[in-house]
Image 1: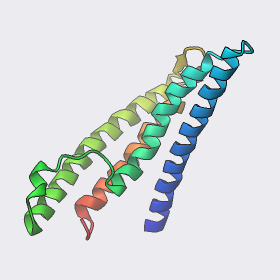
Image 2: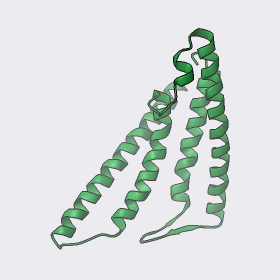
Image 3: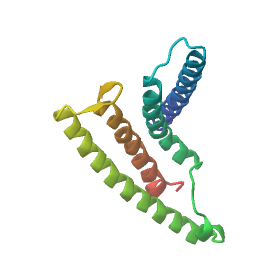
Image 4: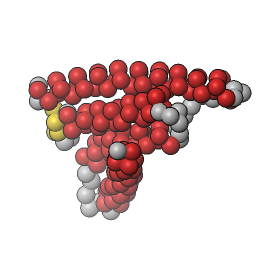
Length: 155
């Protein structure tokens, strides 16, 4: 199960990187085509906005797992042994609680977006759930990671 979990996180972070790469290529080509007076695609900026959101949520669980996220180590820095382990687990429990609340809220919003058939109407019209599904998936895996940190043997 652990291997499946880790491969899923790696797949998500690779998809995040590919999304950023695709956005970069789209913006680059749009600038070149616009400066050559060939074409200008107004939807490129909008897709880049969506891409930033999607790539952030896709990468977040892997970033947390690898410990590459922003953290404040002022309290933990000078602690050793049991105190450090207990505080680490408490911090992970708080992270789990907050992530679980956010997962519930985003799931609720996603559910209503699907049933109300909500649309994002800008240059491109897309169903809102296509964007909202990414925070739900991401927060699920963030909850899993915080659970491992809180209750796992190596936490």
